[in-house]
Image 1 (cartoon, one colour):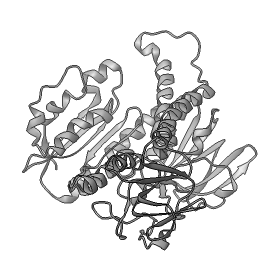
Image 2 (tube, one colour):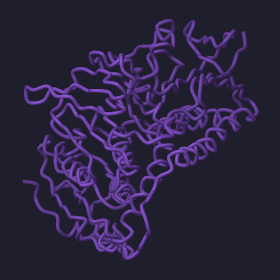
Image 3 (cartoon, helix red, strand yellow):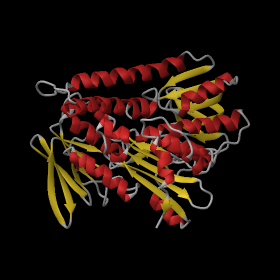
Image 4 (cartoon, one colour):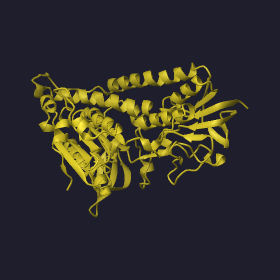
Length: 458
């Protein structure tokens, strides 16, 4: 039985980085990958979707060229085969890079196959059983398929299978009005598809404040996307070459007929075929591996990182998981999950950048707070770019003057949010950024102005 100092299952964001740190510290490491090196982000998540979004943005700007005084003769055509080829090339560069780096890493042995626990500190892969005192789980997550009657009787797509499309769906029906669904919705609308988004809840991206949800819904509708909220999907059936999605709304059932259906109703961890019961590792009701503030499971010497631990569903949280584990294990640096501040983005155009608490969450605390908002149409850089949709919102603790949270839905909101996020990590009062001299013309130059205009949260 091959014995190692550490076994890492999965090569998403956490796994390869941890392997490199452990090898540098003199550990003998085995890393197991059952399918695609690089995990979700590189293969079916961030990298391919943002590459596709870039192509869709190019088509969108080309159609708007006249708004900028640029004349394009004839129509703007999207070559979906070329779009996919570009996406594939970008993904391959990263995917191959991860695989190559691991297979050439001295002190690291790569196993390609499905790793499963056979005992507390033993993992089987292919025909081998491996043993180690330290085991790190980085197995990721996949799309959740909801229990919709007869959905399994029709062809449907997920975020993974969407990566294989090299044609333009005539009418794409998307089940789910959150981050994954909305990015695909705008992307394919800009490619030229008719798009309908069906959301069970009363509004899109329900975890956000209502004004943010409304702003996103408004610009998606402006681009011709049909948004249906308060709508429950109660069935699906084939109708010739089309698919009819049965939707219950307001007590009535109607059909939304499209050519293709994308299921984007959530994610589930890849833990159901990992043999966790043989190792005695505890999961919650949804299958997420339970971890403490330093990402340790209930079994000594076993950690869980990335999407499978339920402590974050982003590439950056997975990378931070690696940093936390490495710091505690190798650097005697007591880093914790609770040290990090919630931060993420929705990569629509314009994007949504988020940090800290929402306005609704601040209100629930009951603490005295200040708030400032600014419409993007009042931001000179946005006006110059003719991209004035959305707004910025910042919330501040009235007493200690620290920033509680911010929502920037607008031009470059995914980048500008870091001005606020870094100030929050520094635990500095808002007056620090209020007195900062920012560069003109930028979006971030208006953050000090917003701090000048803080008002009590009523």
